[in-house]
Length: 451
Image (cartoon, rainbow, N blue to C red; front, side, top):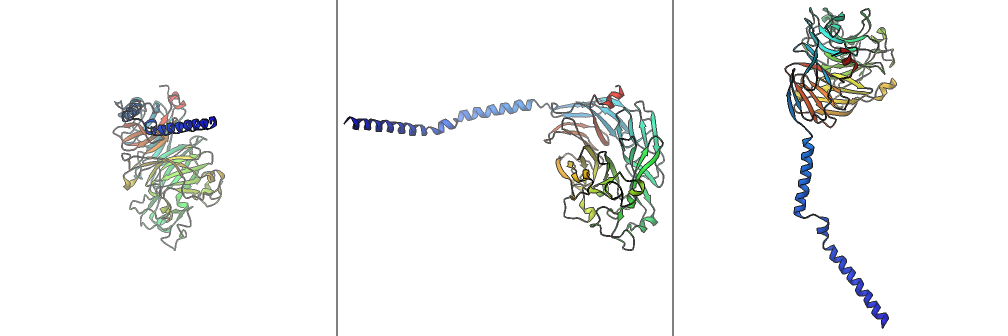
């Protein structure tokens, strides 16, 4: 009997426990989900947090000595100096991020061609316009100078006559020599003899390396030595464009003024001794082996890659090789900026797209192994575009120490954007801006100016 009562008590207790558990389960929504008022309160907290975050961003418009600055988020800008090349106003000056004029070089009667860069010793390396140029295409040059702070010419090199003219860009090499791009006139007779279909004289590109100590040309490369065409089968350079990517399609550009290539930028890779040439009308970058001798550079053998002066690699526009399948990256391009080993920033103007794009590219690893790359295009690591970013000419991009990118939009001014594509700073002024270069305030080049 007692045993039976104990069993009933245990059963009753178990039932009460189960009932309690079911009762708790009916309150599940009350426990796991806040009431309507609590939802509103949580939303208000989130809104306040967003407003606090936005408050850290300080939009401000500043009128400086040189132009207008828009500060979208001054907490994220790289607060240093910018060297500005203004081709329209014929000015080269240094500004801060408030568009205040820090220093301007007295150029006198000299006119900038395009590129002017501040060297580590405080001198300018400048591409200037020759006073009596006979080749009149845009990207004027013909004269290269080193200029000190006071505007004094420390070195001058003229390369301008009816047959050739330096233009656009110059590059200082580690050995102190200077690389320069130059147009080269090809007569109508010679152009016809190599298979040109234009029926006019043409101007192809060349690169010269100048020793400033004695004004001698110590290395040179000429595009005319590396041409192919499929227009006139009676000529020696007749062949398949697609099967010879190392050669340049002579008849890719149809123009009546003979300016068929229009290179506009040059970059040098000191680790692998390679030259990167931006060729605007081909919408490509051509890679050349600088380790060659002058005779080798005129041939298809010799140098580290055993290809002489033929193209080691090319990218940006496969249609120049009659390739319609692979992706086209560039519609006109400027400033092949080798900002760190194996990486390049480049500005593609956009042409008929009416919108420009900046690409960060990872170059093929084969180039460091002296092997011809098998890929037709480099890897895109990062890119930036914006509906308001468009310049059909000039322009470029540099990477800043904080990871931001400084973008020159040629007929507007300069942008600074973060890695996530956030615009944090803009500079605008009346001018035509070839490029803008960044300098830390404690950079040796700035300290050498003794401002």
